[in-house]
Length: 178
Image (cartoon, rainbow, N blue to C red):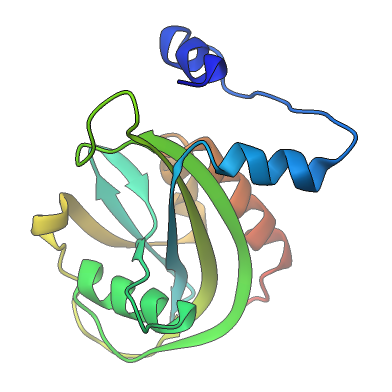
């Protein structure tokens, strides 16, 4: 097991680790080889009222996302996952807004080799329908909700650090929808 993972798991106050080296591309490739790698896609979904679609899973606010299936494009996966997790349809991708990584232990692989490095590619999506979102409870989603920008502090106060970073960057560049 990677020593920094043990340190992170034992010291919950530590949130960041910085790697440096002369050849960052090679360092990154070697780093990724230490994990089970999963690629996922999801959406920052905006409705006609400029509200943002959020989900609550494991008592944390999150954005809808999931694994890319074989023979599926990243865009197709993003739309499918949002539709499945939130019970809505008719989404339109506007643009890619970035990607992020996170590490977790998979319950589907035995320790110590159960560390997953998951990359999620995010898209801005527009929703113009009128369906009431419904949580996909089989995926442990407890709640689906449209939040106004004024309600987002509630999201930021109970979500993951990488989602805070993604959303802050997105909100700085997102055009106002009327």
